[in-house]
Picture 1 (cartoon, helix red, strand yellow):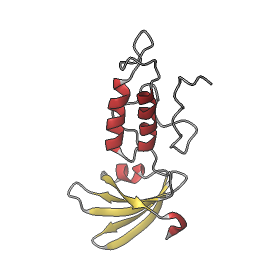
Picture 2 (picture 1 turned 180 degrees about the vertical axis):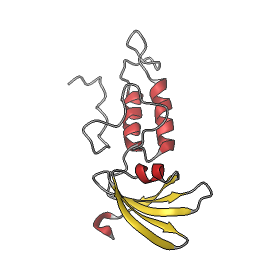
Picture 3 (picture 1 turned 90 degrees about the vertical axis):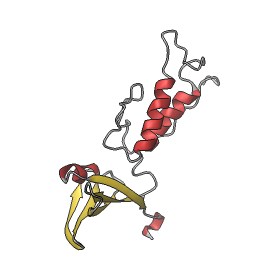
Length: 151
């Protein structure tokens, strides 16, 4: 292996391929994104380190430069909902009222319980945490990770 080339970034997602094009990530984060702020910063870094027609990066290092690899790793990390175990979230309306609570599971799915006026509603399993937010037209607010061992 050529020592002049940076090591590829670690894999942060649970699928074989990341949920975005590593050579042209979209400005808007994909549905799998759990950290939109990190996504925005990473996209800007990625765009600042695209290759020129001569194969060199704008930073004048040969492409892919270390900053480009860091941007790709950060894009992956922004979509890392399930790295490190389950993650808790709330589903909130435009006024900030909680409509439900949920937990993202290691396979990418989620479980939610509706919560209206202090009363638990139906418990539902979803293909991802984004699905109930879309269906209920509400915001997905990440709360915390569940500690290893469930405690």
